[in-house]
Amino acid sequence: MDPATIVGILIAFGSLYAMITLEHASVSALLLPAPMVLVFGATLAIGIAGGTLKDFIVAVKAVPPAMKGKTVPAQDTIDSVVVLAEKARSEGLLALEEEASTATDPFLRGALQNIADGTDGEELREILEDEIESASQTNRTASKFFASLGGYAPTVGIIGTVVSLTHVLENLSSPDKLGPMIAAAFVATLWGLLSANFLWLPIGTRIKRLGEMEIARMTLLMEGVLAVQAGSQPRLLGERLKAMVPQHEQGKSGKAGKDAGKKAKGSDEAITEQGQAAA
Image (tube, rainbow, N blue to C red; front, top):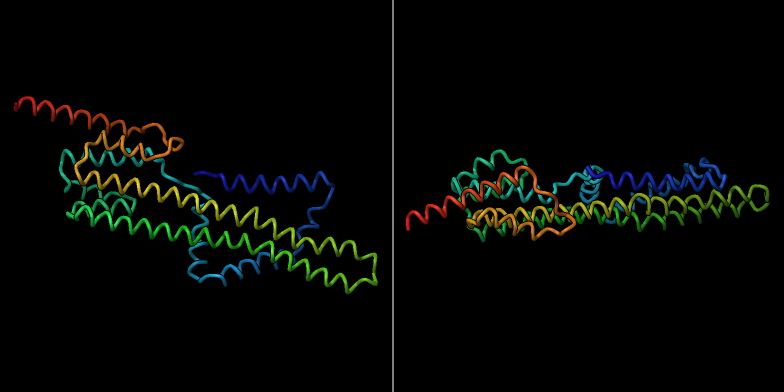
């Protein structure tokens, strides 16, 4: 779990609270129901109006995973592919059907099943690329929805301020009330800016980033399983996949990867010895 978004939002609101405290202002002066209802309600409504209900549902479903931020380290993916390559090398491609039945990742499960069924490499690549593009489109839809909310919220806040100032002008005959009323009028603008920059834009950016990481993982898996199907040597395959991962995202090899590397090395040595004996 990566709590970056939750921690960041809490620190942002904490900084706001610290400023209010240092200015000796009152938090209750900002928690006015009317402008908050307008800003949050109208912003969401406009966001829904700008797309479809399915877009809204997709965006809402994307929030819990984005808050958890659970991602699979690239090295773990590489280790898994190396293990699969060793199994296919020693037992044949049909052995991958057993791995497909136990795989928890739908993308990997489908790829392995297609390999075991004898699907052509080029056709399998097209299938996997279509799945990756579909996942990418879903992520773009969700992130775009929250990005649009971040654009609408400040304008909605200004609308609320204009409405409140209109009410202020109706009470010019009561000068003693003008100060508090004008202050309350600007609360709508404040919440418009706050919701955009403290909530909607960070959530949208978070969904986009996690989507990019998931697409990168799926691409890594695709290249890996296609190489397994082509009969690539496990150790070299691991090095090739590692070269596809940015340096800052590379981690230490896990136990599975080390075991796979040892098996691959042993298998290579055995094959070499068999070749020398035959000669």
